[in-house]
Image 1 (spheres, rainbow, N blue to C red):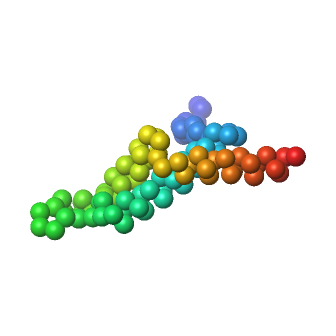
Image 2 (image 1 turned 30 degrees about the horizontal axis):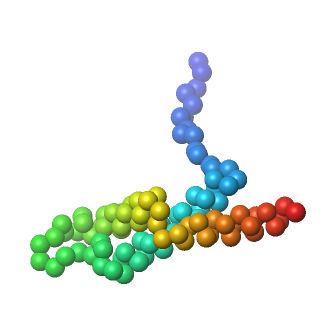
Amino acid sequence: MEAIRPVVAPTYQPQGENALRDAAMQLEANFLAEMLKSAGLGASPDGFGGGPGEDQFASFLVAEQAMAMVRAGGIGLSESIYEALKERNNDGKE
């Protein structure tokens, strides 16, 4: 009788320039999420609110809104970071 092997989900690992672009976009999204938090987005409203559940999941909402902003063009930070990373990566290869 053959043993049952566990199913392992394949992991996506971007390669080369895609990895640099993904890293740059994630960094811009983190930056924007912090800016949105500072602006008060995700803070619990006084009075009527969603309770403790809202507090626990507000950070997920802010992070996803920040990533949506980046996908829509963001503030251009990810492109600058991407170009700098690409240049640094190319300098090491020559």
